[in-house]
Image (tube, rainbow, N blue to C red; front, side, top):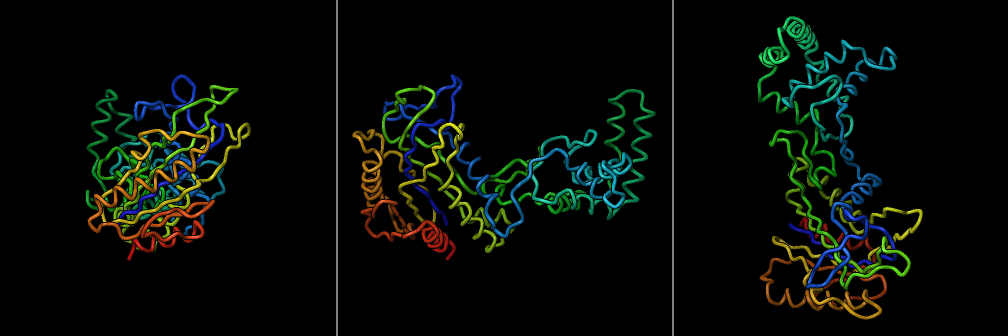
Length: 369
């Protein structure tokens, strides 16, 4: 099932995103310049809001190159040492090689890895499962480096060191230790866990750049700030989210609720102390469908005019959705839910929840039936 969000949000003079010229971001749509809010700002804001919610899930994802040092510190914790010993780091490094993610340099991993919380502890425990084997291999690696005629030969000899585990065991261990898909934001928004293609989490949600429903303009006093009524669109694939979370439907349901609440409230502000433009969407419109997607931005191909673009945008959005639904809907839409902060939306065949939590519960519930 698919859950789509269509949002209308009016934002006063603020700095939501900059282009290379350090001014408001713009895009041409309908042959008219529009204010633009790049989706990456919305995703980043949503990820931060997810971390604040008590979702009873593993954790938000952790982006790190210091997994080896974290694991070594966990092993040496009993000694109360401020920093892990060199021998311990050597030991953990050998265990890290067994994950099949490349050779580490010093205490750093070869590339940034995305993990769930407590990955350092899991790597430490994995290391201790075969401590003697890894200690022996660490000793042999030191001898290779010390006796090699040149760095390239040393590298080739290192790569030739026998593994403790088979390739299949390495993959299983990497999934268990890094547990990247237990991190709710990685399951939702995706992330490259390593340079290996098989460890790349495909995002379960899509977020479009937000565009103003009217022509772009600038504030009277500053060309660095922009005020606009934005149309925002996002889409969540519940099947992909459930698969990313290991098939756990209950966990996927909690993550989906968190996603919807976070996306609605996502509103990055580059200068909060100066503008504090923390508005919320006026219109929250959710569509639950079996497949496909309808981004309704074409409702605003002809820019909204007048002094109240928010009210005009709401009317236009409702009208356009009705037209698209009448022409294209062949039964794939399971539920339509729409609410406005200031009044009802004239949507046919639509339930209008009184609160955001009610809308989220109905939308996610309909998608998981």
